[in-house]
Amino acid sequence: MNDEQVEVADLQAALGARERLRQWADGGQVAELLYAASASGWLDILKEPTTVEALAENSGVSTERARRVIEVFLAAEVVRSLEGPSPAYVLTTEFAALHRSPAGVRLDDTIDDLAAARNRIRSAFSPDARDHWEQDALIVARNWGMLPTAASRAIFSMAYNAVPEYRDRLAAGGTLLDVGSGVGGALLTTLTIFTQLRAVGVERADDVVQELRTRAEAAGVASRLEVRCADARELSDEAVCEVAYWAQAFFPRDARASTLAAVRRALVPGGLLMVQELTPSAQDTPEAQLHSALGALVAESRGVPPVCTAEELAAELRDGGFEDVQVAVSPVGRLVVGRRGN
Ligand SMILES: C[S@@+](CC[C@H](N)C(=O)[O-])C[C@H]1O[C@@H](n2cnc3c(N)ncnc32)[C@H](O)[C@@H]1O
Image (cartoon, rainbow, N blue to C red; front, side, top):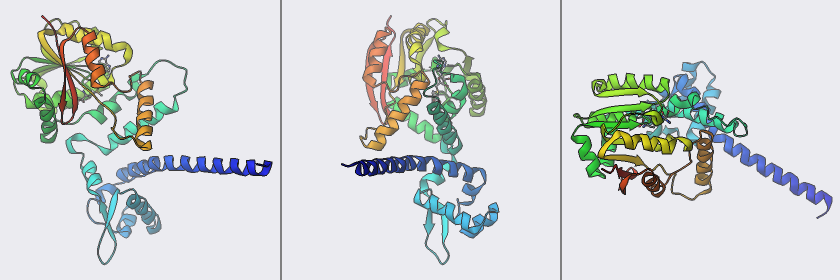
């Protein structure tokens, strides 16, 4: 290749890279537009079939602008068009559902969580070793914590049915130790399924604890729940809980062994600990690989190991002194249960 050909190839490569950058940015821009549409009331309007003219009039933008927004939402499958004399648009089934926030799964929480992840990625090269967990604990907890509704009870019951001994202990009453409670998705749902159960919830972030207490009141289970704003590593309870659940996927590397030791101490002899494997999608597409690599980077910036498989969790429980460690397959993923020996 002569100099000119080398330069042309270089230019083509740079233009190709620029195109990929634009493609990556597209999803983020749709998310921003969705956020703006939610804030300006568009999503409420789009619950029912609506024309571009009505949308424009409602928000005071030109018909042309409203049409451009709808074009983006059509291409992103946020809305679909309806047959008829004049074109009308309505949210697709998925986005109509997300807009209704079933079991507290909210669009705004998802968008806040995406923004928090973006901030984490932006600071990937910051030499500061501290993970600053306080800054986005509430955002992450809200994005994970479902409300205790019939739907979430059905999902948690599917999981519990895969571990009958653990389920029967919950049903028998006694005390559940919930470690890393967040805003109580698992904890409050479990308390509403098992009406004899009492629980201690441990959460280190005080804004998260505040919201957990509010949600516990709203769910009518506050009288059966003790919420502690504490670091799980410092639990000093001894042999008081029959069962424990550890939200392991959110615990940093340097806190795991000491958390397990504290949980083991708090369980009665023969008491059971359950953890859940949270694996990324099994797909092996370039998109799935990019998604899991980004997820691992965000987790790393929070000091959390990216993904622990059920086998790794089982080994971690055994190393922590748990016995009879078993992996159970449930419709909502694999669960690992270990027993405190006598
Ligand atoms: C996001 S929640 C997990 C989901 C939650 N179990 C639910 O079902 O809603 C995990 C929580 O663990 C808390 N956490 C992490 N490390 C902790 C520690 N050492 N002690 C207590 N809580 C901790 C985080 O602040 C976070 O709110």
